[in-house]
Image 1 (tube, rainbow, N blue to C red):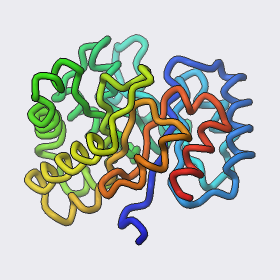
Image 2 (spheres, rainbow, N blue to C red; image 1 turned 120 degrees about the vertical axis):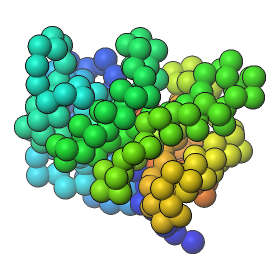
Image 3 (cartoon, rainbow, N blue to C red; image 1 turned 180 degrees about the vertical axis):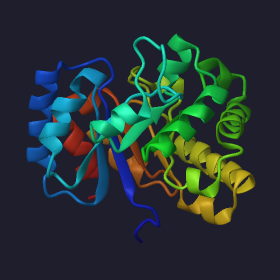
Image 4 (cartoon, helix red, strand yellow; image 1 turned 90 degrees about the vertical axis):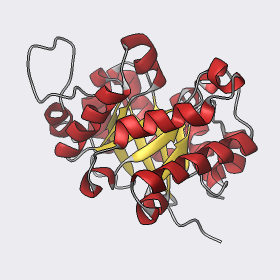
Amino acid sequence: MPKPRKLIIAGNWKMHKTASEGRELTQDIIKELKDFTAADLILCPPYTGLAAVGEELDGVSNIALGAQNLHHLPEGAYTGDISGAMLRDLFCRYVIIGHSERRMYHGETNLLIHDKIKAAVEYKLKPIVCIGEKLEERESGATDAVLEMQLRESLTGLTTEQIQDVTLAYEPVWAIGTGKTATPEIAQEAHAHIRAILVDIFDDAMAAKLRIQYGGSVKPGNAAELLNLPDVDGALVGGASLDAESFAGIAKNACA
């Protein structure tokens, strides 16, 4: 039985690839996935690579350009930051918000993430909002409470119009870049819990509509098992997105 929500697979390149390297990687990814339509595909290079990657994606209808972050204000004296208008001017369609590395290294809070979601939507950017628990939180049994707090503080107060193009990305922090992956049972349990919270914040229809990705050491070998779970609607891919064959393998295996 086909899923009610189309899969969404995004590659988060983090602080990897110069503009020229990103251009070459994008060319290779296009060769691998030029006719692939079974999932929505997004590439999220560093800021310095957005223009180059965007040029390669120009005219490629099945792969969208995304950014890794944005500032919540439209302009101002914020050295090193990038606004939603700047991203739209480079033809970005998606933006990652609240990645655990932003939370950890830059002190981003749920309330700031809330404001960034609103800023993204204002500029017609589709937010990919990251949530997830740390290892000590999982081991202490606090996973459900952490996810609920992140969701409520980030999403409560958003209108139906503001939330409808949001994708959530469940990324257990202990599985990001570690080689550890949540078991299918852990992933499905967390995604189902997230969807139940969405019912309470919004309603059944919105909870059923919103896509929830899994992120955390996703590879071609485990993509099918994870992405075919009932409440897992795609993947936010880190290291494996830096290789065209690997990224394509995740997409193709998940949709086989």
